Amino acid sequence: MSFKQFQFIAQINTNISTCGYEHPTPIQEKAIPEVMSGKDILGLAQTGTGKTAAFALPIIQRLAEGPRGYVQALIVAPTRELAEQINTSFKELAVGTGLRSLAVYGGVGKKPQFDAFNRGVEILVACPGRLLDHLNNHDLKLNKVETLVLDEADQMFDMGFFPDIRRILKHLPKKRQTLLFSATMPADIRKLADETLTNPQEIRIKLEQPLDLITQVLYPVSKRQKAGLLLHLLENEPTEGSTLIFTRTKYGAKNLAKKLEKAGFSASAMQGNMSQNQRQVALAGFRDGTFKVLVATDIAARGIDVSRVAQVVNFDLPSTAEAYTHRIGRTGRAERSGRAISFMCYDDQVMVKAIERLQGKAIKRITVDGFAMEEAGEQQEPKQSVRPHNPNRRPKKKAAPRRSGKQQKNPAATAQKSPNPKRASNIFGLGKKEK
Ligand code: AMP
Image (tube, rainbow, N blue to C red; front, side, top):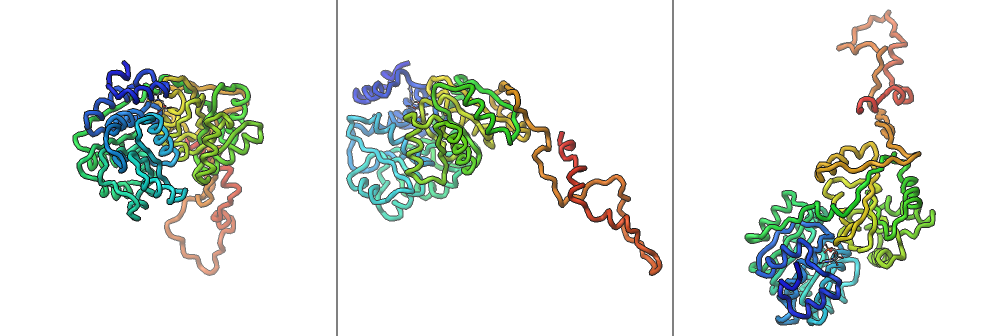
């Protein structure tokens, strides 16, 4: 299949070639004709499938010959990085059309954004919070928007943006085209889709498509050995391109990046506590190869498109199987192959099962000499509040018998009533119970 069949104007075809796209990806094949015909779309697709161009190309085609000077397409995205990335795609695909696109998000000054509105913008890519700020200040109008795109809707929901989105919707004309994209479709996203879309065309891009290009491996390891195993793998199994590592917490990302730097790797962290400027430096450095390793949390890394990611490492597994798919989709993008490594501790086994169930196949396990998964209970703290089971203790009596003044308390029995924490931890056997 070729891009020619969409009959884009010549300038757009030139831009597609300049971007190096030879054939439409599956989501582009399915979505572009539907978007061009004016339909609403409910797209179940993740980053890495080419979904940005799937909505950007038909929007540019529609606006290319039209009027200028006011916002006609609005794209709402959860993170600044994703907003920047979408804006870059629009700019590249709209070269020579005279269309102006702008990314708007918080953490930077409002004035340059306000000035850009006044100069005229046709395509606006925005994060919900800052956009609402501008709307409340009457900095811009959205009453002539023809196409609204809600991108990564599940992430926007997770980040608590839905109330803002509903407020933003009030500023848009009722009659418009709406495209909603999400990697997953839980009930809340369905509800938003029902509220915002009219007779949508549902487009699903199967998870297997990007995953087929990715070699997945699981390394059983104990929590305390994870950093050691990571260093071992980076040293002994180096890759050509860059490595994106996921941790569960911002603190974990920062710490691990420091450890890697100390060990001599060109590494940087990317997490929510960093300023916008620091994040941009980290991302630019990762893109141009200054940093070969980027350690990120899910939120900070969401939507990051770095085409040379050779491997993704799940230093900590995510909390859902869908998030795992989303993470490893950063490698093996747009028809390139990649590698996904995950560390599996004792507590992760349930999640690994869920991931394997979602994919319908088992993931290969590799054990490295000197590294092994902890036994059950190895990392569990004994709960001091729970009284240890003492087989020598007499069963509790329902009511204490009355003692006569002459009767003496049994000193041994009294002693047994006060739990000895030291002893408790020895005889708990919590691990055994869990096996
Ligand atoms: P996205 O899913 O929109 O984040 O896109 C993922 C990556 O695929 C980006 O680097 C795009 O530039 C690239 N891409 C998009 N469409 C195509 C295509 N038709 N052929 C090759 N690469 C593409």
